[in-house]
Length: 439
Image (tube, rainbow, N blue to C red; front, side, top):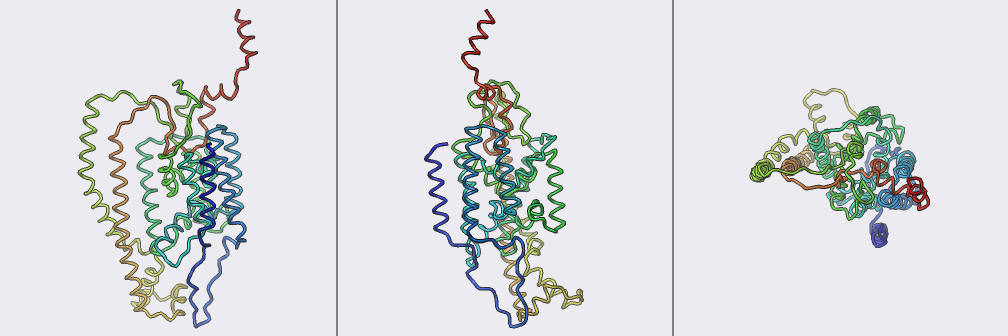
């Protein structure tokens, strides 16, 4: 690990901490003329502000340590130790908040809501793993992320997922990322935090849905390595792109690949790329024609995706509190709903007219119409890009860790004979005794 890289990260974290405001609403809460009381949050419990810089410091140190363990120490045992510490600290003690994954929603909200000041800690948690990814690969995923750690510890009988299936499943993560940005931009909530599958474990939450999601992911994770990280996590997509551009990255062997093939099937995440075979000229010609066809078809695919996103925007908007409340009020006026719900009771206490509520609903629907179109076009663009990537042939002569998909877990280290030689160097005395016995 170069000193210049570490110094750069230290300077950046200082700038983030000193240059950004704390996470508070600039506008005060509404003052109701009735006896309505604003409910107080109970989860997570209030924390002293002194813990924010402490959490950022722990994250910063854990990222540096994880990078050193994967690039220099190359020890799976130590990586697992750091993984357990991160699970205990950021998961059970910190209760999963703040985390870089959930910070995606905070960052999106700050970009579209001028009344929301992005917390400095959330900014640091969002950016530091990405910066570490640009320097050292996915060090955060390997041993720092509590969501990844809890899944990594249950991988017992991993099954290989075909590459085409993994690529297709990852489209769901891109859709999840786009919808998370859309819902944050329209003030509809933070989807990633709301449906965090392991937050119920960390906070001992009574939410049965989250418990069910968490147990389901862990059950699947026994056979499919880290299913949430690979096929759902929106932040993991950003780290994949940082890993592609990383200055340094995990290597299977400490020096040279001897093509022993011992690492070929050891990775439970399908992140080891095998040497490529010779590509015949006719295959190059066929794939070139397919790539040209896809490039020509690209605008059509994006347009179709945008149209689908526009058509489903009324259904997507039902997740917005204003739209949902307007629908309930409308049903109440038409006689289809007779029982007063809590949102309608709260609405009556605000003194807002029904006409004003409907006007707000129309504004939100307009935002969803634009946002839904962009989401559909974006996902279609990603899907088309993956189809085009299939037509691109890369040449590899050694077994390599995929720069985007490698989670820096260190499982492949112990299977490399060159790593075993590095771990147990043969002393000169032993070599001499072997020569004498051979003579």
